[in-house]
Image 1 (spheres, rainbow, N blue to C red):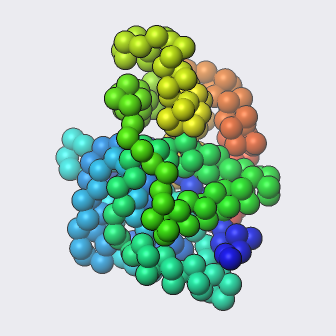
Image 2 (image 1 turned 135 degrees about the vertical axis):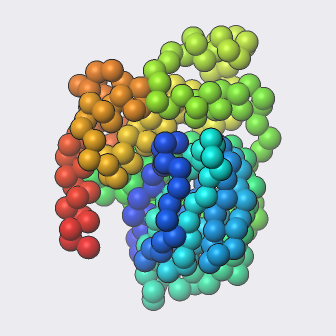
Image 3 (image 1 turned 90 degrees about the vertical axis):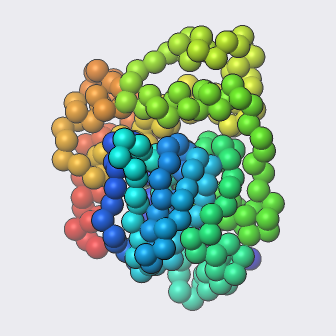
Length: 266
């Protein structure tokens, strides 16, 4: 049995659609990718791998890789950094390589959007229970894939359309009525259908996307709070700060300072 107190999800973030490319780089941790929108490719040790929405793959520590996105396109994806202990997680590392394989793309569809949004929120929390919950969820997810028993299923076209709308409007404010009007379904029926398919109500999922994108902007840019708020569809930075604290358990400023401190200590 794998020890989830050893394997740790260090972070799980939604890269904003404004991020177009990376230079070739490596990590000291495993890096898991779940693509939710757009198109592009990854170069793993100079070998290109095309990816599309619903794809999952991982890279091992120290593997040189980079993201490549065509001009005028974007790639919206969750990236989770996983810490595996050399001794305690040797079996898990061996199984990942033998049963999944580095850089081998799994076509999972939309079923795991809510799971990755939840892991993102939990991994960024100051609460140790939440952080361990993210690790437990990731361990279960990887175990399902290694046993070839993913729970993904075909997604209703209306849910696909709603997900596409949410992903392409991360930087804009919108209401449920606007979302439903574009789909043409009864409001109550759509909410039930979306929750059954994705796991959470539509507007909660949309907010998770916005907060995940905001957390990455706070981590990777020096932009002031008002600018970060605007980039995820809030015209009031105080309202944004309140929603971010509810989502992450800490204020945007405290979250940024904690991340900067962790980087200095590494």
